[in-house]
Amino acid sequence: MTSALVTPEELSKMVDAEVAVVIDTRDPESYAAGHIPGAVNMHDIFTYLATSDASGMSELKEKFAAEFGAAGLDGEKTAVIYEASMNTGFGQSCRGFYLLSFLGYPKVKVLHGGFAAWTTEGMPVSTEAVTPVPGSFEIDEAAAAIMMDAEDMKAAIADEGAVILDVRDIDEWIATSSSPYGVDFCPRKGRIPGAVWIEWYRMMKPTALGPMLKSKDEVLAECATVGITPDTPVKLYCFKGARASNTFLALKEAGVKDVAIYFGSWNEWSRDPSLPIEEGLPFGA
Image 1 (spheres, rainbow, N blue to C red):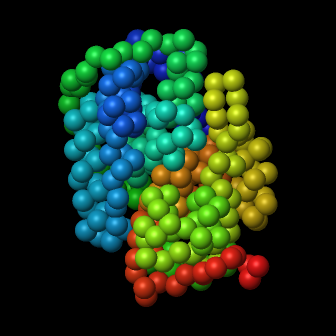
Image 2: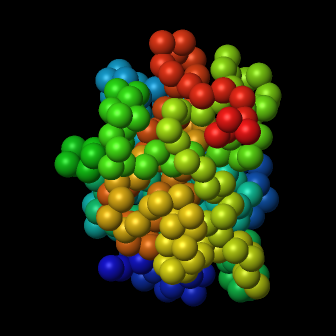
Image 3: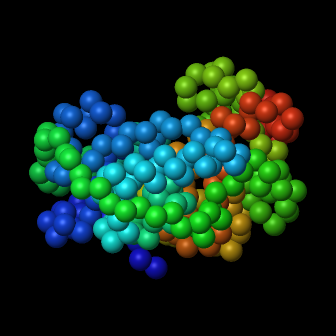
């Protein structure tokens, strides 16, 4: 399997060969202060909140197909997405990887270690604004199987063969907070019934270039703690699909075959009182 992760050196060669569209997911201020030369800034890869119903998914597809096309993606060039570092942007570069994968874009990679790795390696930094040449971006609906809606998640609760994996931070998992945006940002605190938990940080480890995704064997060892094997159907969720996307990439790199994300995640699930939740401390503790 070809890795979806690229090193700063590999990306530098791709930029020189003009075969990549580099997408910076950081906030505009960070981008303006210095970015990878030629990179396009798309912070709403991280900020956009989507609902999983038909209208929400239609809006999501139209919005990002237009934006990715405007950034220069044409089906031939490789999209390479980065954030500040792998654990400081809630997985926002991986959210971009997931969105492009969902839209069926054929060539998508993530800069492993993000901008921190790039600068640590002494690569060039630019403050020049970029005006990309638009590309013709086409959606491939065949890739939609990695996206779940609320009905899919309800079905997963009843599916004994699947594992629902919650990757939120500890305070969200134990139901003392509803989101990273505030304790009471969402109307309900808790978990999707039957979920198991691996905090998303556990898919990474410190290195000289900053936090990096763990190796295949290390990721599979983390998975084994909650009963996930490479053949287990895994249904991921977090708050809005960013941290889940970090885990999605880690699991796919480790060879887990069937991984999907409930992209509406807790932001959507908690707002529908008809949907079941587990409250309080997990496992009756």
